Amino acid sequence: MNQEEKSPARQDLVAEYKRVLTGVLDNRPSGTRQHLAQALGKHRSFVSQITNPAYTTPIPVDHLNTIFSVCHFSAAERSAFLELYRQAHPRRQLPTGSQHRTRMVSVTLPDLDDAELNLKLDHLIADFARTLTQMASTFASSPDDTEETQ
Image 1 (cartoon, rainbow, N blue to C red):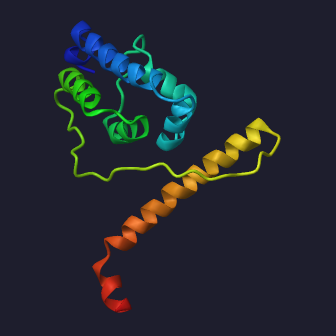
Image 2 (cartoon, helix red, strand yellow):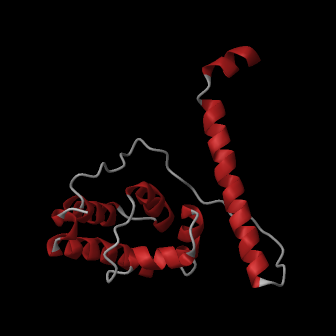
């Protein structure tokens, strides 16, 4: 890590954009942090780390679109967050609006009377959805397949 990455100004900017994210999350329904963890394929402790201004660990750029989608950032919130993110990480390529948006789908499941088993099932379903999405993207981008089926 170079000096710029360790500078106090950069650390302050990271803390500031994490405060913006925390403010957004604090104004969302309970359970949003858990939904975010599931959408990112991470544990809830990861969400705690990326939202805590005391931790200088930056939020990975690959997670930004998911964060914006799950947390339902307003245009002003997104703009403020991205401005701080750009200042903190000037060399990082930020996601563009041309990337795929995400959406939430609710599935009703039985309660298995075991919190750990319920969580494992939640993660299994989230992983399954990600796998299906990747497969669908592969099928959609293959022009040879569409010619054969017509």
